[in-house]
Image 1 (cartoon, helix red, strand yellow):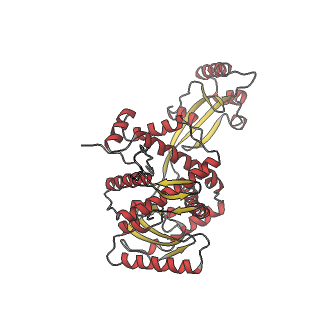
Image 2 (cartoon, rainbow, N blue to C red; image 1 turned 90 degrees about the horizontal axis):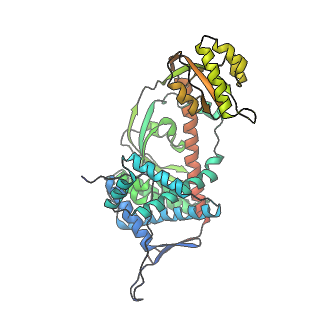
Image 3 (cartoon, one colour; image 1 turned 180 degrees about the horizontal axis):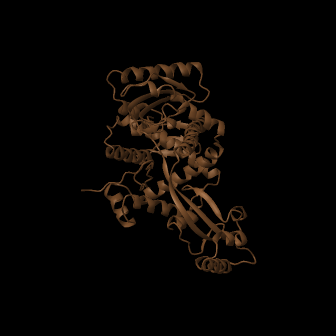
Amino acid sequence: MTQRIFITGILLCLTLAVQAKPAVVELDHIVAIVNDDVITATQLDSYVDNIKKQLAQRHTKLPPDKVLQRQSLERLIQQRIQLQLAQKQGIRVDDDTINKVIENIARQNHLDLKQFREVLKRDGYQFSDFRSNIQHEIIIARLQKKMVESHIDVTEQEVENYLARIKDSHNTQYHLEHILIALPEAATPAQIKQTRARAEDILNKLRSVADFKQTAAAVSDGPQALKGGDLGWLEAGQVPSIFDGVVEHLAINQVSDLIRSPSGFHIIKLVDKKTTKQQHIVQQTLARHILIKTNELVSNAEAQRRLQRLRQRIVAGEDFAKLAQASSDDKASAANGGSLGWTSPGNLVPEFQEVMDKLAPGEISQPFQSRFGWHLVQVMARRQHDDTKQYNRSKARQDLRERKLNEATQNWLRRLRDESYVDIRLNR
């Protein structure tokens, strides 16, 4: 059986070179001007062809070719605008980074690089074009991080309000599909009226005979349109804030009324929902350590030798706590005999956590290095701890950040699109 690779979120926009032919034969033509750049029919056709392959892999019914062309062209325009801005911002990506990403994708598909190339070729993808689009994805991700993500902040009060709001639905997950009929920035009353009428017409069709996934692929301006508008499974806190008060009242397979936001008119469908009891149990470790920092007078070799001598003295029967008090450069823990208290996974730096996790209670490590210096660590005890409260708080902060980031990114993309010069010539 032919092995296929499912590549999520990678837009395969292929640029093909064309050999010169007699002038009477049309080789290519421009389908859109984007600021000082162009998108050609060849590029669009290649992009559409690869989108069709992706939709076929997901067993999603294809929209009509004209609709798919329009949707694909809009995504190419958004991609091109972002790449242009990234170039102005001096955002680049080196070959080593691209190679590592491709190696990771191959590894996730349980393939080596040679096998990965062969499967790409068998599925109709040129490796050079795949690599180029990986580069574009990384550049765009770095651009969005710089322009949007770096400005996202979540306050303690927002976390408190969030936890209070979702306490009754904290363990509920929703599978949603979504359609957005977008409005331009600073839309006029006439534009709003016209867009609302179009959205209401779509909603009426959805409530009669229209298939939601196919309709989303055909008409939605949302980022998941070509996936049939499928947002996947979302925990209560991950549902976009504009849908608060709507999703929880929908029955399975029910389609919502129009939901207005600054970006346009939204329609959502509740595909399914489930409730799970979430108790977060972690293994905590009680450990103590001795730290020797390196500097101009203390080399790595000297720090290691000192700790090796201390370890020999502890093994011979001397008290770890007293030696930590006398010798450790971590003054905060040294005052407590080197004790770090009960720690949960993720509380300590990875290189320290990795060594500590391999020790049995009572065992003392060999000297090892972290970003802070050289350590000896002794595990004193382990326990199972109900970390649900702390976990929920951390999860709430993460959910709020993701929600803010998604909304801010969509608003930023819409402004960027509205502020750019775009001349669509698809049907000319």
